[in-house]
Length: 138
Image 1: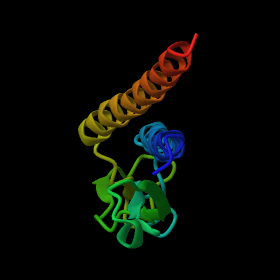
Image 2: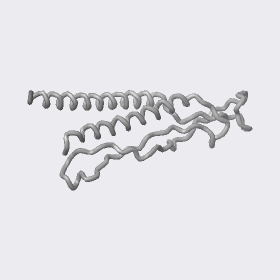
Image 3: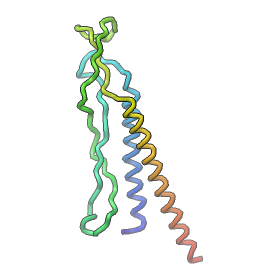
Image 4: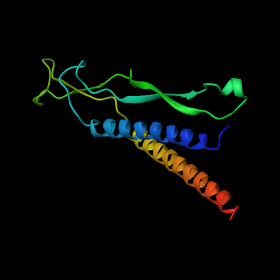
């Protein structure tokens, strides 16, 4: 394994956590939105990640990056609330709120932020070690 692969691996982790943070921000910003139908209500979105295991098995390496497979919408039901006086209420008097759990989203945000910071530390440590190695020859 090339010593420069560490930058690719940490960079892929940073990209994944950046996407995760953006989705958390989107979920939190839409947590209090209201809709007049189940079809148009905002649904919580989550990223799907997988380890990139290309050539890992052939080379007997344990190094792999993170691959973003996509973004999925939560299948949890939306919150129905009876509010007949609300301007967006349907004919039955219900409004619909997103299936976003703000406590879970905040915990996910802290976890993603910490993971991003850890990948930055990996990059900085690898850079410092390479610079120290280069200085050994002086």
